[in-house]
Image (tube, rainbow, N blue to C red; front, side):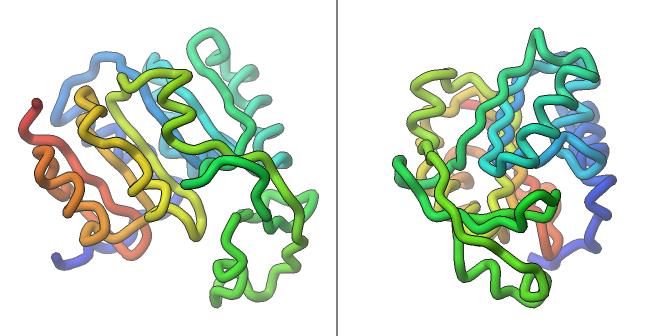
Length: 210
């Protein structure tokens, strides 16, 4: 697949929302955002929330979770949005965590990710956080999510593979920080195909519902 030009992070959420409305209509739905960050300009889910959607927003970094929670309440989303303060990982428990304390810099459960060219200059501090699995989340909040976003620095593919996608019968769009070659072996048999992909994100849509 030929990669598309990268969309600026602050425009990605608007792009995804516009494509949803174009393909599936302007109605409301439910959004599952794993790695929701701070609900700022680069948020994938915020344009959906502004359009009246409900959501579960999961964020493992304590600094960004505080900003996320504040943003949900200040925007008037609180009645239809649940916020989960936990890292989402393939294995539940107490997980190592690497963060630039007191800043909005991206944090991760992957030590290797802290040595990437775009992160190597940051001063990451080791800590531990409570981690839940996708199965934990789905057991508590259900499987009925129209759009799912997975943006978990260094562990997106692992968490994607831990989701029981055949049970996600309502999901019609998946946005993930991963190449479509990682996503399609699982999602293509369920009726998904790529809508676009760049060097950061892939957007897949379901063209055949179960």
